[in-house]
Length: 271
Image (cartoon, rainbow, N blue to C red):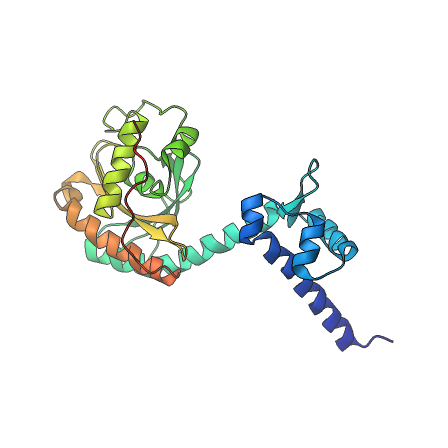
């Protein structure tokens, strides 16, 4: 006879064994190889191959892991990444909102929390300096190459990654200072040097903005804090606003576990 407590313990053991498999698939070895086979996973977790195979099959059915039909190797699956992405964005918004409210109150302008989606910048959250949120920009995508938030969000990109992401730059923003990938790379390098990006009426006539990077515990840029406003209000204090926005973004980064350190020099130059 199996008592309820025994059943709960068995479920707990099963969950821990599944987590061991996921940890192995997230290991540096798995990341370098792109996948791991059943035999290697059994070695890493200290389990029988048949047990590992059954567990992986169940996880694959739920989308938690994926099996390559050619190599038969396993890697972390789409559903796990989807869950993690939603969790990270929720944590990001909760960490950023109070800092953004302070920023907006200091500058007396609305601030935005932005992430990169393909070639566009998507606004997750907009906050005013008052005790309410502003929803006009939330969920709206704008071109990355001609916005300060986009240039911040591309700070980790290599020249090769820019070529892949932007096979062709749309030339529908005549006021933009970026019409080619070398020009975009130059703006990214300037952003890296300054610690923030600024744009004067490149995206829209009469609109200026500054943005600064939010980094996760690894130091990767995961979002940008942006402040945009009419040029008549913010245009004369863009650099001051940029420095203040960078300080606010650094506070959010600290909440996510990032300890600031000097930026390394760029590894390559786009020509």
